[in-house]
Image (cartoon, rainbow, N blue to C red; front, top):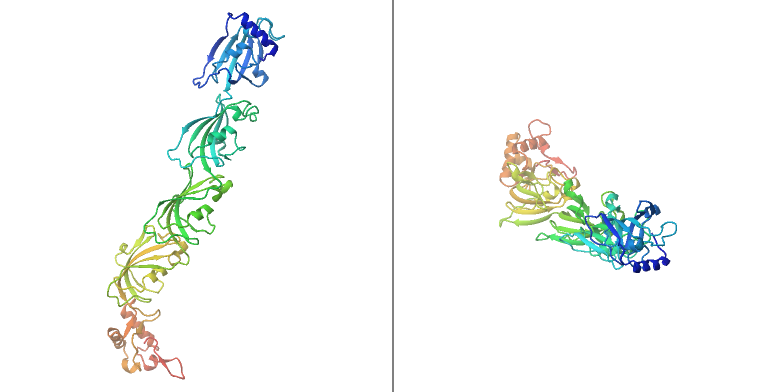
Length: 558
């Protein structure tokens, strides 16, 4: 109950005249388990009270008024001396029954019609708050990560979770319950002064308890119905993110293969695996979980600006840790439910391969025999062995997986075009490593066991080589054919025809199709020349005039 200045004189006089009279009686009937601070003279306090006479009749109550009492202890006090003395030594959340004798209350005069003369008063007090104008922001570190590469500085932008409570323990707000961080700049006007001071120096992942006195919080105005005037506030803060608008992409190269034959540039198409996390380690996306690389062009705006920049200069097989500030990622709006607004993103990258749409087959000869007079070409029949892998070393398939090495005719569309090209101009026993870009391999669709847009690495060895004939031919002359041809042949049975052709092959004057059984080739050749199907080849059937004026004979097969 408040007193007037006039009564102060009488209280002083009573203290002098009744110096030996009974003192205030204090009953501490509810003491909190934890008490970090007790009320001292000069402190400010906020408390609820009920004032009664000894017979229990109530004469005053802060609860009836709808707001607690706020005042300074022992300095120009607004309360009677006994109550001023009775609250000293109290803890927040403590309840006391304070019995004040008349000479420490309103004495022989009483207080109007409310307090009679010589009345003993009983106050039931609950201490809600306690502070001093000399108080500073108190910071209690609850957890700090071992690795802290950056701390909060003025003008930084932060995202943090918090629980806000009063000294008595009542939680007035929680970002956890809202399932959303509090996002703000660390600068004057964006935060209460005590919070601005309290989060400076924090690391991502650090937890602090920040105790802020009223004059560095919401002071005499409070904050709506949540925070009363003159309230000390406690924020339990977990820092989730920190960045500065001046930040650029940060690239940490963790592993780089040697040698690095080529570095990615703008316009290249790249395949990479990644884990995407926030700064607190929470994973928001991963290509590994989908068992598929992320495939994109570099520097052409198909990915966030920060990633576009970070992918430039990578080597195949390289590992990078990339930190992307939000203004180079998804900005203040985030991306759906996956990425919140103003989130710093961290990507752990593993580059699988990259290529340029203009790339050709890259051929590296690893062994070439000294004697190399005959080389493979289009239409030749070859026997070869191979290993095929991705550029990161992942094995795809090998000729060792089959009973025999493959035989194939080059230039007939039996192989992917890049492999076909890489097998040409080889000597028998020559070995090569060839790199085939996807547009000369299996393209954007991939194949069984081959990922989409994959660059392929082949290790090749040519085992056998049989020179071929042009597509559509069964036999070609290696020297000028006899003219006229029919008298030289002078044969009318397919057995004699076959013997003639095989003689030309044996003497090096001609070549039959190497990819088909020779008996089949010879039968087909005879059939093609025997136009009337009478089992004989005549001179008319052998010679076909293309230019009737010049009468130049053309032999269809021969």
